[in-house]
Structure formats: C-alpha cells, structure tokens
Length: 383
Image 1 (cartoon, rainbow, N blue to C red):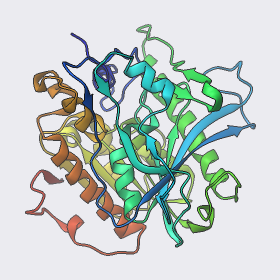
Image 2 (image 1 turned 120 degrees about the vertical axis):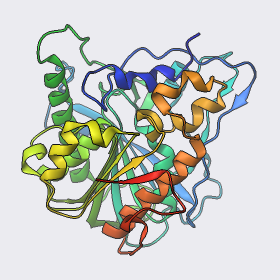
Image 3 (image 1 turned 45 degrees about the vertical axis):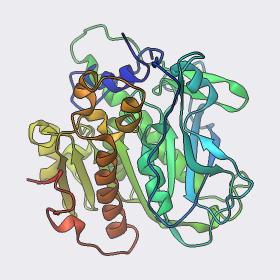
Image 4 (image 1 turned 135 degrees about the vertical axis):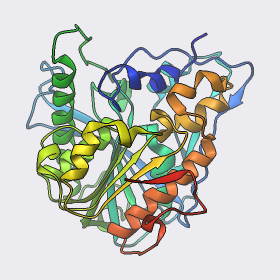
C-alpha cells in the first residue's frame, strides 16, 4: 500500500546524482484512525510570526514555462514576534498542497506550525537566513528547523522554487505544478537538468535578496526594520544545499552557508568559498560523495563537516517526524529516513545548525562545533 508523503521521501533516489530528487506524483495518505500530526516544539525564548509573500520578478520569463512572461515565487518569512495574541497559528502547508497530499477521508490531520500569521515583529537587529528545499520538494519541508532558528532570534526566509516544487499555491488559489521534464535517458541529461535547476534557484535567491533589501508595506509591522542586511546566511537541503553554496559563490551578501545532505554542483566546485560553510550528511554520505570531497578541498574559510549517524536523505526534512506519526511501518521508511528516532534526529540537527548560525551570524560563541559532544553522540565529525 502506498502512503501519502512517502513518495516525497523516496524521490531522493530518482536521480543517480546523490542527494537530489525530482518532482513526482504524490500518493494519498491513509491511516487506520484519525491522527493529528504535530511538529516538534521550538526551544527558543521567542514566539514566532510568519507571513507568506507573492513576489514577481519582471526581469525574466519563467525558465521552466517560457509562456509565463514573469517569474513568480512564493516565499515565507519566519521571525520573532512581539505579540501573537489574536493572530492564528499558520498551517503547515497551503490548502491546495494539503488537498494534494491528504484528501478527505484519509484519517490524518496535517499539522499546524508554531508560528502566528501576520503577528508584529519583535524589535531587534536580527540576522537573516534563507532556506532552499530539495529538488521537487516544497518550502515547508524544513519547518521544524526553520522554526527553531526563528525562536532563537533569527529571521528565516523560505523559498518555493516554482515549477521545481511539486505545487506552489498563489493568492486566490491559483496553483503552479511541477514542470520538470520527464527523463528520456539521453546521455548527460541528469547533469543538464541539475545545472538548469541550480541556475534557476540561484537567480530566484538573488531576486529574493534584492527584494528584502527594500522596505515593503506587505511585511508585518517592524519586520523589515529588524533585518540586519549585513548578516545574511543560507541553508538548504539536498539541491537546496548546493543552491546555498552556489549563491554564496556569486553573491557576497551571503556570509555563511550550510548544506544538509545535498551533492554539490556548479562553479563553486572549482572556485571554492572564503566564508564559513557547514556540511551535514546522512549516514556515510560525506565519505562517498565525490562532490563533497572536491568542494571540501577548495574551501578557504572556516569549514565543518558532520555526519548524522543512522539517518537517511529525508531525515533533514519534517517527514522525519511526520511519517512515523501517520502509522507508516518503520520498515517502509528506512531507505528515506534511516533508523534514527525522528524526534531525536530533529533535536540533534537543531543544535548544530543553531550553533553554526550563532557562531558565524549571531555573534555568539559556543563550543559545540569544536568537536564531538557527549550530549549528541549521533553527530560524527569528519574528516
């Protein structure tokens, strides 16, 4: 029996290039009884606000659907909130995406986030972190990690890469579905596809950076004023991690980056980086991925390479905790999620991602990145 969300976890193996995924049909979720899925509670001192934004880049046509004469994106900003009363908690995904993965009668209720829609921003001068999801994965897939950063004082901007994501819902209910061409088996096809997707994502990200640099009335009260444009970082999962590195290569506004289990691609593989970068791999990924070996050799700034024991490629998404809650047998999830317990996986990832952000963006020093920790034996330091 095929379960909802499982294919999103399994598509990571759809391309031969490790750590990438392609968009695919999403099967419906089934459960033996009604289950409300939940995301892990953030641990920071701040309540969280969030706002979804429709951005239009009029300087380019859509690279996946040339008939669309502008490039449209949906992004979501997560931030420390001043007051969350009277502001409802935001759903995990948009209504159209919820209907796609969880049709009526499934017996499963999708989670709410811990963020409150449109809440006013808490005052402060806060670092900004961009988040890019995996190829064929939606912007909400890293919510557990994103909320943790926001609860500790960061402003996080998650990006849906239209027509690469399986479904993007715009205001008014209009949707854009994946336009990634089906594979034909031609030599070099996968490399060309990844190269195109990476270039599109970098252009998307730089457009978002340009947009954030200007004040906008569409942002909640106090939010733009609290963004420190001099302290910008980026994190991504799978191809999103390669996007973070390549964006840093071409745009010095991004001061630090992190790749969660994604193979590297692009000019950064030979040009390298002179700013801090974090690599976190699933079990044995970093030791077997030749692109990581090449990338590591050309890093000239502070660098860290870690491996999360007993994890899988999709352990670095919310599916690590949501799929087991839906009653899916653990044996069906091993290939995508490994055998690490979901809640523990999220706690360990949060600790190290926050430590990296604090050290290189937050102006807070800690020791967690100095070497192995008895508190987190699951995280192995490489090489």
